[in-house]
Image (tube, rainbow over the protein chains, first blue to last red):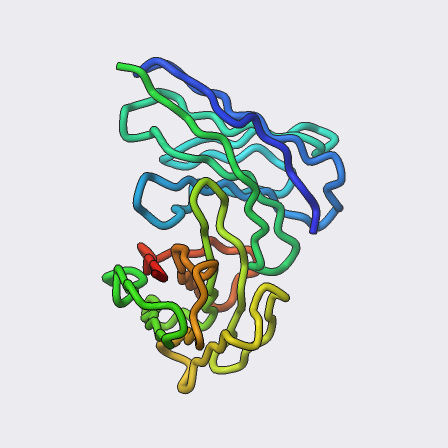
Length: 109
Length: 115
């Protein structure tokens, strides 16, 4: 399974944008990039996914580098409810997601 | 649609006992997954069903673990002769048919404590 690397933790101020980076230098041409987040005492929650083009949805935006070796999850205005562990995952036609330790995002009021 | 439901939410058992967890996926989701999560770690894949067929099993799933999905709807995960190292959150997820690489919907998990 292709691996991703993420910072262990990040901090953001409330109502400011947050850019969560992910490196995946060994990504294959058919790997999708998925982002999930996990709030305390909850199961993981889908955020967004993409293959090559940048993606937007109501929760976030996903910016994918042209060489696909890195991506960035963008939360446009962080709220206190966005404090969670964010996981960047590669998936190739399957759902056997390989979760790493993720990035713990703290949002300061 | 009530989401993925797991039962029980918490289970405390004595070492050596057997435990069984249940997962009810979202209606009409044909794919079902089990993950295990220990404190401070991301979830680890255990096994995957498509309808009633168990298509993939992690090597983490020792012979003490067994999972079933008899009619392609709900699933059970049984752990026999529990050990303290089995203490973890057990997560179930489901996803709909038809699309490759669609999102998975996770339940809130069953927290197992082996004493």
